[in-house]
Length: 322
Ligand code: NDP
Image (cartoon, rainbow, N blue to C red; front, side, top):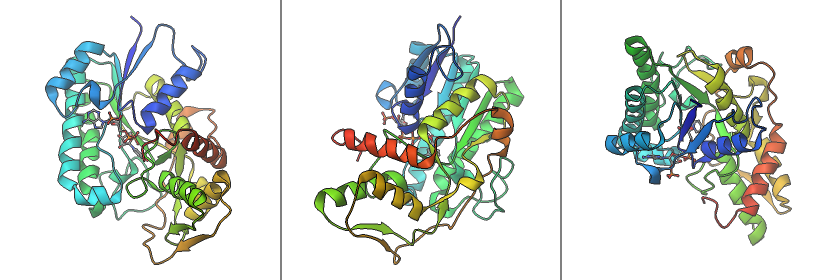
């Protein structure tokens, strides 16, 4: 029987990117559909995964042989700080239901999605796959972080007790088409794109919060999508895998803002509000394990990926999440 791949959270930033790649790469190619393979992209309207009965129904309907589990309650810093219990409870429920119902339905493989937020607050950099559980996560989002960490614990327990092939991926900051472009609640790239777009429309200054000096690793959602597809086919180890560009590809928030100004075509006043907090200066993650396994893989140059994202936002302004 050909494989049926269920992508939970299929309507989000990462899910939409996997849908794009699987439908645009040639059939049978490295990141394209395999002959006869079926891909299902589920959203919350297809079943609320916090509810075990709705989760069971989704599996009865689609009968997946493989699952890429992306669905999560996701949010920016403020939302995470305010709703710690909700982030903990909802994400624990979603992940426990997906893994248990996958187990009961004898799903051949599940790849769940963690985040670099799972790592300890006080840790020696660069982050790597062996450092997840060695200290407390940052207090600001401990609900989300502990719920995600438990996925790794659950994966190992399912493997040791039942031999299930469950594993997880750890992406760094993701950006691309279909992101959440809300001005206050979104991640830095989509929020700045929206802000710069409005500054251009309204002929007002483009003000970036903070000094612009912190460094981050960003991964383009279409590159991440390819890595998920590769993982689905080629990675059978229970230990999580960091999916990221290299440590030498960190970019500063100023470089991000400069690239956005260029891509948006903004010509007005552009400043940094240094009275606003910067957050952590850098938190580099090593992609050494990934690069040792994936073979030939080229990441999209940051500016090209940003240009594509801005072009998507401008073309889809009316319907974008904002
Ligand atoms: P989005 O917020 O863009 O999408 C979230 C997805 O989860 C949507 O499809 C949403 O469905 C679905 N969902 C939320 N709650 C439920 C529920 N109760 N039942 C069923 N489905 C639900 O998230 P991203 O694409 O950005 O994130 C995907 C994964 O990647 C998440 O696990 C996240 O933690 C992780 N991640 C994201 C990073 C980033 O920078 N964005 C960085 C690192 C990790 P609907 O649209 O119908 O509400």
